[in-house]
Amino acid sequence: MIDQKSEILTDIGSPARSSEWINELLLGMRLSGLNYRCVQMAPPFGIRFDTDSQCAQFHFVAQGPVMLRLRDEEQVLETGDAVLLPRGGQHCLLSSPEVESRDIGQIDALPLCAGFSCVGEGSPTDGGVPPVRLFSGCMQFDLGGMQPLIPMMPAVMHVGTLLSRYPEMLPMLEAMARESGLERAGAAGILSRLADVVAASIVRGWVECGCAEVGGWVEALRDPRLGKVIAAVHRQPGRHWSVAAMAAEMGSSRSAFAERFRTALGVSPLGYVTQLRMRLATQWIREKRLSIDQVAWQLGYGSQAAFSRAFKRATGKTPGMVRSHSGATRITVTPSESL
Image (tube, rainbow, N blue to C red):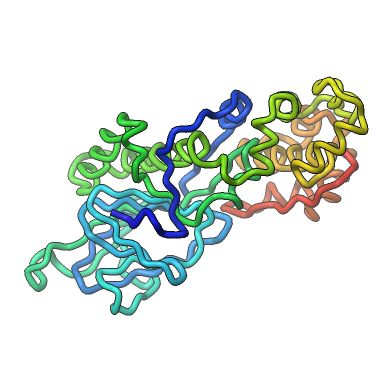
């Protein structure tokens, strides 16, 4: 198992009580698979993943062990281990530390269906050593209202002691191990969905049990009065929010609320509303394929033109540009006082 003392690892099983606001906002979490791979490699081998930093990478070890190397850290993953790298990045899976790695894209792959392929080299009898079997998924990671948490997460999130708190996850991991042989009809689809659920469960476990240490935004959510305001904004992003309206939700004066909000979250109240609206707009346009008029109306803008101006000002792109680009492109939102 992975060394629990590593800097890039978090113990997500320690008990902690999540606030009602965090639970409510976590309902917006989405993990959408971009591509999945079943990998079988006979040692010695080294595989490098250059996952976009704005995507998550999930690995499940059906038959190990295998070594995970990220930056200067090396962790051993045993059979049944699952890890999520929420910000992706370059990392390697190795049979042993001295083996050179090569990009996963350079290894022969057999496409099974859209977004799913089998990758492998070597036979089970090579050198008398059983092959390592892995299942990997590159995922678009959208936490909805919890999006500010992604930069705060550890580089590697391990299922670790999560099983002691959520024993219902064990059957999912066991099912992944069975399906990874791809011997039954529909195994590719089942594996993909199981990976999505396990990865989401790892994130939820960290949010519920481990994210108290990150402070700032999470502490704001745990504050009963400030958390109430944030949850209200996420419930009704299209409401005509003003500093006065938000202060009223908190039961505070405008000046006291604005100062407390900026101190806790590092952005003004109206700037936060803009960030949320632009993230939602990007998701609705790109994934839900809503019309620009529908998005503008749901987010409280008086016209498509007003929404388009606000979107361009905040993201540097037009809504039409977002619609025309598929894949894992993320929009960077610049805080703005203008809604």
